[in-house]
Length: 146
Picture 1 (cartoon, helix red, strand yellow):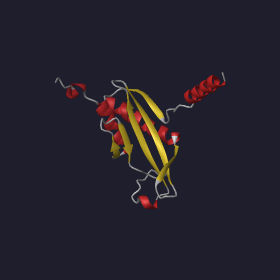
Picture 2: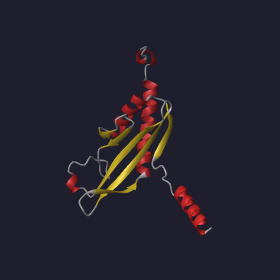
Picture 3: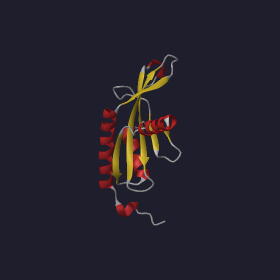
Picture 4: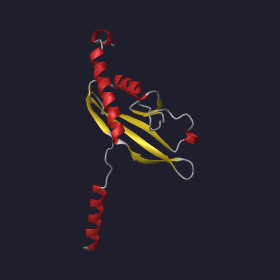
């Protein structure tokens, strides 16, 4: 009986302590994946890393003042923006996270926190750019029959 209660308690603890999605999510974006990716790159700048399928984009490292970090050995803290295009077809959702990393004892960087306020500001810029891109798109010229 005691083992059953312990097992049930362990299962409940694992279920309740599962990961939560961080950052900000832009729901139901109007553009296709490649146009969404182009808008994201326009907002966050030249990416440091893009996943193989093009759905995950990491920005270059920057400091508190949003300036790119040229010499990493001098930085004590660095920020990076992680944008993920979610969904298998339109309308896509776009998740924006800002990761804050701090220098550890060994000289490397460890994740300290996620900055949701900064992520919200970047997500708002992406949302505005997505809406502007939708309004300026020429449907006839962008149509591809094959």
